[in-house]
Length: 304
Ligand SMILES: [Zn+2]
Image (cartoon, protein in one colour):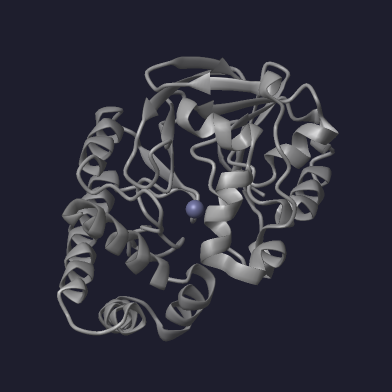
């Protein structure tokens, strides 16, 4: 646990034992206790232990603010609501259906993760519709002693929203602003299937810029300043990686070969920018071949 602003605490969920892979953020105030993206069910024991260190229980939580419903961000929602039926879950309207009925989400995830689903994510229980607070973007939520602005920020996912807490200057951006390790300035795109959209994405960054945040809080991993430089670097790198992916589609060969070529480019870039140890950890933890699958799907949809 690490206080990053008044009544605002980063919790490292130590996903599969890895530090600095998935962060959640605890917002406290006015007798309320909210988490921004509670993480997957496989991290619930860690979450429970971290809260206990502060004398808090899972049943003390009053709200979950979801940026999007991918399992690394929201997989634990159903299990949390079962233990705590008064919990409110904020979610964008297109994501809501996947919380009440996760079957399609699970099928889509199983295509990526195969027989590793249980080990990676654990149980994905449905959330009763009565617990949901459905968002469209544009709202302001009064929560945990502060006002939180909501914006619709698609690009990584069609149902992605971001949250801005003006009282701390922190924008909770989920995966809209890529991945960044604490202590490094390198920003990496997150472009997994199924609904990467490079055309709408820049508008989402513009929306986040318009808040003039002091810090971004990407789920992977934690608060980072120099917002302008972060966004500029991300935009430049996504454009380049998208171009790598597009070029592979023009080549003869199988998708496995195309992924291999894409990874060569990406890994060379990582080794130029990060210490070898950090690169190895990244390659194990984030499966960057999924960036190819998401980008390839985007280009093929456009061509089709
Ligand atoms: Zn994520």
